[in-house]
Length: 432
Image (cartoon, rainbow, N blue to C red; front, side, top):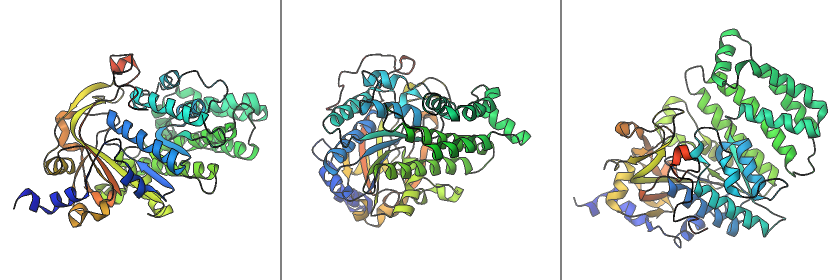
């Protein structure tokens, strides 16, 4: 049997379109009518994933009226980007300075030149439509201390009656020195935790809703930081036990945050999500389901229905990436070896051999519903153990569409310890 007779090869070739700047329209047509569009990535350190997600998001915001981008990032840091993009008072003079403030490891995920380009575009776009500005928010929940500090700053200025409670929460966590795992170990061993205080603070902020003259979203920001604290405290305690509990709690928080953002923006609002494929690709189409794990892509489909949710996966055959060799160590540029032929990326390389867009996987036939390995690189990556980075995936069940990139480049971080450079690369700002 020749390659062209192979059902998978034939199916991929029938679906695929060449990927270039003018080729997004077929995918945009597939996304039209959805209330939630999720755009994935196969690593947290690949330039093209950020650039193509930004290009798609720009078209969705401009042409289809999407209201915000919500990303796999911490709420306080991302909210500073939102303030800058909407030109709120004292929000910063340049996107680069705002993004350099992302100082939680791994800094390169959001403090990078690709994000500077998108943020500056979003600021210019919002300047032209002050009555309906597009936002930028974080879905994640790692920022226990940062969210507490933001709340104390808010209530000290605008709700002094709540300051004593906020400081009581601070004193509860203070003995652990901003070390979440130290807190979690103590809570597990002693049955003593700060959960009651954190929940009391959330309920008070929800009830009082302090007003902020210089920030139209200040009340929502304060309340969301309290939600982050409640779930982060629970997450770090859950993380000390085995099982899928901490993963599921994190993605449940992401889904709850997305729903709050949609509610905040009104009945007909629409949102874009940027997160790793492992979060946005339906977990039921992978081996995650055997571990009792779910993710935001699955939860969104279950809650909103497939017609209202579109999931777009990303992947590449080979290239380079920014990642760390161990947790907490500096990011570095690493080579990404060619994907094996039996993987989805290997099959696409053999069938297509070029950057391609697969806008409607449902039309791909039975071959696209068979499980194959699908590359997933996290913030920690060791190429010598590459075989362990492939997740068994039924592609047409996991995603509605797919962006395939034959060869990709490493992200361009802002922070010198990860980048080895502090100036924009020659191609900045990538057409924005």
